Image (cartoon, rainbow, N blue to C red; front, side, top):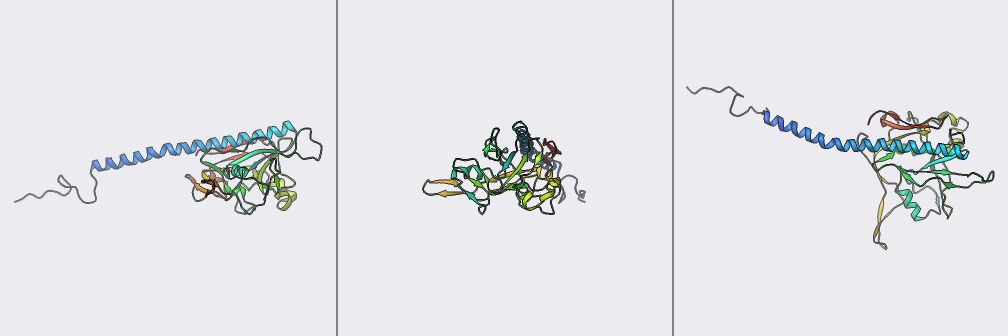
Length: 281
């Protein structure tokens, strides 16, 4: 009589099962994938941390300049390009400067200078156009023009209509978002801004702190380019850039609740001091 061998003992393994070697191979592959992903995630975390610190430092610098110069200092931000927004005398080189800094660029700006005659405005930059580190941009919800009731923990920035851009040809840009520090270093809003003109009006101070909460997102904003036949080169177009959001953020990164952003830059409305808040990325 031929002995019957018990199923699963020696010979071929039963269907649907795994041998020890196969399990070790699977575990090894999982470890390899995790090992490859870890450096990329760490790099992203470093970029986000650096961007938050950079923005907080520059806001604190603007505050200090306002105190030293005893005048209001603005930090103006470049939003997503809206081709319908009025722009006067904006040369192509300046358009290029702004278009490549959509949702990433900002500059320190003053509407008057020390020694200027009362009532006479002298528009000037106090810094070059800066940008956040590669791979990070400001949530585009900071640049919308209405206070959506879904916002929680932050609100869009105020914006000034027809704000002059300091250039030799007298360019102006309608709707540049900004934060402002008065001569004491405290947060303020321009009397010519949209909030005090059309939105909060007399109660603008109630929400001034929420307008200075700035969440950042991992991802990129790439300017739109087109092929220019005469120059045989690709040229930056005056259009909204292409947004690519990366983990740990999803969709387009336009969250309405501040808790979804993990970290953010916060400015104290009374002292004007900026700091980074939030957990580990």
